[in-house]
Length: 375
Image (cartoon, rainbow, N blue to C red; front, side, top):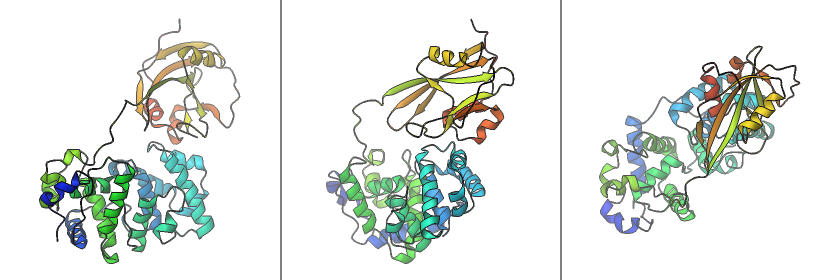
């Protein structure tokens, strides 16, 4: 039996309690058949290697596949095994991760590798429950690893899967609420096929959400559930998943970032950020509350030769928006002692460091036009 028809589901969809299909295995069977013909089969992490599956799952959290593919290849080339990752300095891991954002993922990746090597002999646990006990591995990621690599009949529920289930079954509950999470986990578990189909079924859910059932402009005409998708039948694709009401715009913050160059050789001054706060542990340009404070700091290194304001850079975080106001300053720097947390760096060497994405973009743009002489 196919998923319940839109007409059958409309009454319950408003309360977010749409019933699962009477024959849940039919949903899985149709999805597996679609995945075999239309799904993705050439992603570099596909297969049963727990290390590669784990890496991809962590990288794909809040990051698109098109971005992850290049990072994944470089990361695996640099850290080909979990032992190599565990043995690497954290700074090297952060540098390889630089640009993917959400750097706590990289820290947890490094911690998890250390635990797997030290406590499990370099072998990932084989159950979703044991995998979820490792650093940085949540319930859905653990289920994906267990399903793909060990054939465990475990349900995933990432952002793509939430969207597919909300639309197909008319779950109209605000995203992220306890009621929505409970309903979607129940639904996800009820739809699981037999263990022998779990890997292609899991891949099919991911593929459907990533390629057809997209957040905007879903391609319903190519979807295997077009005829009985609750949201499509009601013309409500754009309304599901339901969004939390926003009470206020995200707070706005701004900071002055100092791109200080040594006049003698154009080296720039970088500092390692503290272990707490935004971009913890990354290398970055010094930040100040005002231009005056930035210039006072630069003046400690020697006379300021010239300075220039650069175009502001806006960067979004989960809970606020940050505006960076770069100030380019050339100083006739005298000898200045550096330490493990700061120092002069050649511009050409900066990309090899773990840099925040907006700072990386600023430096990658290269030297701007020569600044006006300081007045």
